[in-house]
Every structure is written in C-alpha cells, then in structure tokens.
Amino acid sequence: ATADTGAPTIFDKIIAKEIPSSIVYEDEKVLAFRDINPQAPVHVLIIPKSRDGLTELGKAEQRHGEILGHLLYAAKIIAEKEGILDGFRVVINTGPMACQSVYHLHLHVLGGRQMKWPPG
Ligand code: 5GP
Image (cartoon, rainbow, N blue to C red; front, side):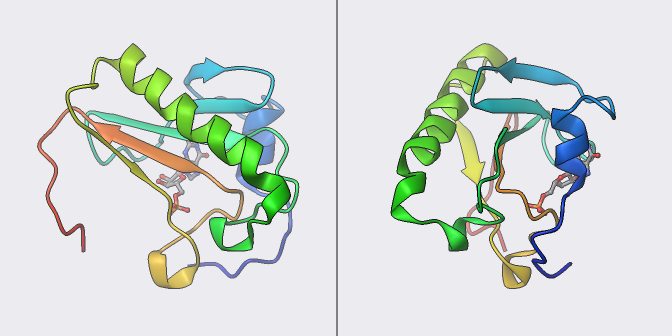
C-alpha cells in the first residue's frame, strides 16, 4: 500500500468530474460512487468532497465529527437506495496494515451477498 503523503489523490479528480465515475448519491458534503473493482454485487465508496486533513480515519480530529457522522448516515441512505438494508457492511481501511490504498477518507458500503466474518 502507498504511504500517506497528503498529496492529491484520484478521488480529487472524481470529485472534479475530470475522470468519470458511476455516482449513486451526492449532496453538498459527500459523493458516493461505485468501486471500480467491486468486491460484492453492491460496492459503493462514500467520500467527503473536502478532504480537510482526513487522509485516513486514523488522522481524524474532534472537528471532523460532523462530517464523519454525515458519511455514516449517507451509508444508510445508500444501502436503502441499493436495496440492501437486510444486511450490508461498512468498512474503513486506515493505514498500510489495513490495506488502505487511496489516502482520502472513504467508506466502503458492501452488500448483495452473504458476508463472512472475520474478514481477514
Ligand atoms: P482502500 O483500499 O484505500 O480502502 O480502497 C480504495 C478503493 O478505491 C479500492 O476498492 C479501489 O478499487 C477503488 N478505486 C481506486 N481507484 C478508483 C477509481 O479511479 N474509480 C473508482 N470508482 N474506484 C477506484
């Protein structure tokens, strides 16, 4: 996995719509789009439009509380829209040990198949 340099990421280009993505939900604060390499029938990424230091969850500060709550509630809205409220998983990989690859905080919303636990 790439180290966290704080440099712009591919997600900035997705927010700017300089590269295409399949957007499933958008409001003034967050953008949600389908993962390019889906790990389940539904695999959506939710990101803050303004990274504001949130390269990863492990860098969160108290001032990020509002956007963190907004992202988590957006996960429920998306699960409802995608028809997976009967069971879905929300994942945040943070840091190299957790296989984070893009250093712009993002929630994975996964569903549409039976999940396993532990994830490994
Ligand atoms: P991470 O491993 O950092 O938690 O997850 C990053 C995710 O971003 C991966 O699941 C990867 O497939 C996805 N991803 C990387 N580049 C792009 C892209 O250009 N478009 C989309 N839609 N997803 C991407």
